[in-house]
Image (tube, rainbow, N blue to C red; front, side, top):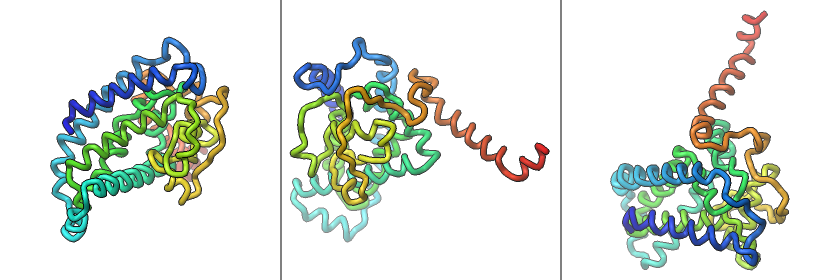
Length: 271
């Protein structure tokens, strides 16, 4: 799957989802019109395309050399459909682990806050992701797949489907899909992750099995009047591109300064 074809397909998905999630019969809540900070998220989307290009043209040629012989031979003997399913499951599990890490690490959480900063959750909110996070999200999973010997012809559509599925999960679609939630993540489940009080739940991107195994699945409905955003910073986290792009570094510097000021040595100097 070529790079341009993938970008085009994803762009079409954004447009289609944007139309569907605003239809009265399908929407979860009424979205503001015109969409706030659309230009900001378009810039984030452009940056995501750059990160994807780096992943594809810089990292992937090297990653394809990582395969381990015995595992590669086992994977090579699988039918194409089995290779694809295996690739999707493994990639999604790695994405789950990375996502949990983004929340558990103070440093990575400062980067991930950008994604949680959106105040109006819709398909296009998927684009609001820092470039560093884009690489963290998509490169480790590919590393594991290539180590296993999954061919690039399978890895490419797996990554593309993961990206497309993410648009659906972040959408404002309010249709009842509870029947598939035993296996698949739905917009209903993922929007709960963007409510500040429950950001430590529902980390899964495609399959719900990981959250079930690690007891991080919550199935509480989100009400239309609940707010999305960064916990404790809903109204203060920057919404425009350049301030938001710098914010992880700004906050890391502030945290470092606070830590240094809190050390006994610093306290002694202050006295």
